[in-house]
Length: 150
Image 1 (cartoon, rainbow, N blue to C red):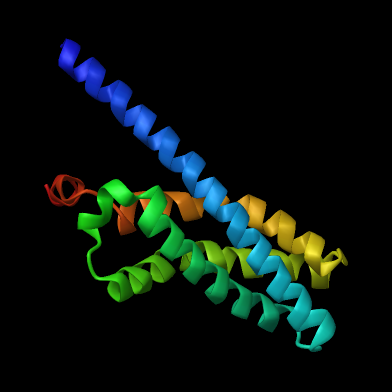
Image 2 (cartoon, rainbow, N blue to C red):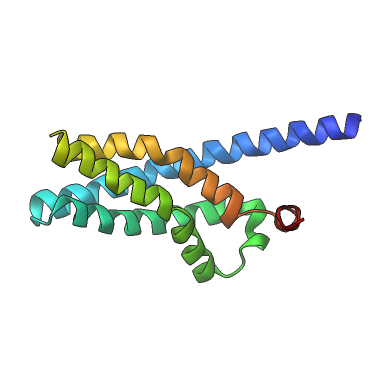
């Protein structure tokens, strides 16, 4: 019984540590995302949703690399092919990104909120989905796969 308690504590610690690291990586990604979004929309003149899509792919790619080598370093053996892992990551977070684009459109085009502020709110509202997808699908332990199948 004591072993199960200790394991549960370590698992909770690992989840918390990974969430904090994931969030820090996310802050770097937010800076990249907003820089691209602003530059492509205000300086190049692209439609804000097209700029947001390019920002998603760029910041998502940098986030994947940082998460692979830092946040989920202990789980790299679950994701050995970097390109395949990137595709898996981008697919996993695509639900969050579709929600993100929908929320930006709703806030900006329907409610009239400035697009950068809309992007901030949409990003905040979809962060949990991104973390869940990364933790449970991209960098999950193989045991978790077997548990799901049974």
